[in-house]
Image 1: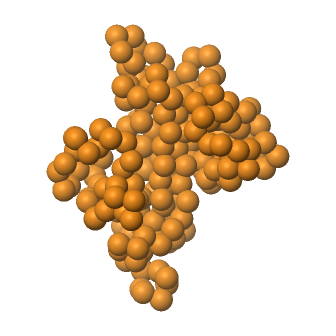
Image 2: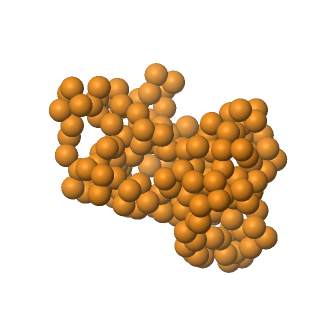
Length: 189
């Protein structure tokens, strides 16, 4: 991709179970968004082969939001996490709007949860020394499994609180970074 950089990525190895096997996944940090050309190619390949994003322009826009991704032992991206700063309407505070895409073959694994935890730490570690430009992470839960499971108002591990529903009818949950303070109304909007 033309907007990718050759900045070094941080790799965190983690075991992930996929069905009965114990495949290894690498979790790669790319925040602040700095996806090297090899990672950009792997992530673009994931989006293309799964039909996740329709155009090269959409992929280029989303590539500028990559927090991290997971790749298998063959170097193929199997999951990607992105975030973009927004003012969350329900709380009128700056948060990272977080998205995860996981390849269908990996949706029964712990890849999504491990990538979420990895991204939570990455975003918090980025925000803290900068005075918390965003005070947390917002999830809009689109996967049907969330409508059936996870109905508790407060999740404990990882900690997310229910704050309402989006205009599209999906549950919204927010995780606040430890130490973050609410922004005054003029600073939040």
